[in-house]
Image 1 (cartoon, rainbow, N blue to C red):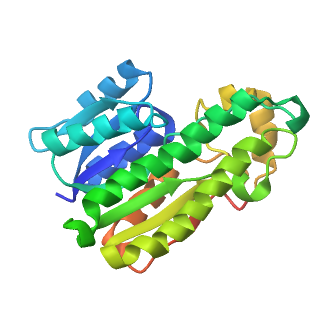
Image 2 (cartoon, rainbow, N blue to C red):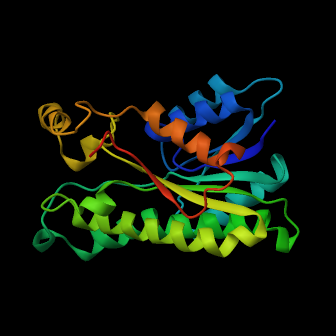
Length: 249
C-alpha cells in the first residue's frame, strides 16, 4: 500500500479518474464531494476492496469548519494521510469582465483558491516531519487557463488558477524541508461534463479541439496519469513544478 490519499472533488470527471488511478497504484482513498453523493458513493463502491478502504466525505472545501471535520474523519477512520490532490474547483458561465459581479468572484475564489489553501494547510499539519508526520505529497489541479488567460470567457477563473500555480511554487519550496513535495498539473481542454457549466456546447468544443496541436480533447485518464506520477517516488526530484497536460495548447 502507498498509504492514504485524499482527492477533493472526486465524484466525477478528472477527480474520479484520479481516484481510479490511485486505487490501481495501491492507495487507500478518501473521496471528497460537495453535492453529488450518488456519484461519489458509486465510485467508492466500485473501488472498495477487502484490502482497500475507501471513505466518502461530503464537504464544501470553501468552508473551514467542513474541511476541519473532513480531516478529523480521515484521522479517525483511515489514519495518517500520505497524499492530497486539490482537484475541487468550479467553472463559471462564460462572460466578459464588465458583466461579472462580486458574488461570482467570491464563490469562484473561495472554492478554487481558499479551498486549496485550507486543504493544503490541514494536510501539511499532518504530513510535516517537523510536526511529527511522515512526509507526503500534494498535487494541485490548475488549468492552462492560468497562462492563457481565457479572454472573453472567464478571466476570473483563469486568475483563480493562476493563484493556484503561485501556491504550488511557493508551498513546494516551503514544505520540502519537512518531507512534503508539492507540485501541480495544468490540464488543457479535457472531455468532461464541466464544460457544460461554462456554456460551451459540443460544437464549440469540437472547434476548440481542432485548434489544439494534438488535434483532440484530452481524457481525464491522461490527467490522472500525470497526477499519479507526481505523487510517486519516480518524481522524487520534482518540487514546486506544474506539468502541462494540454496536447501542446
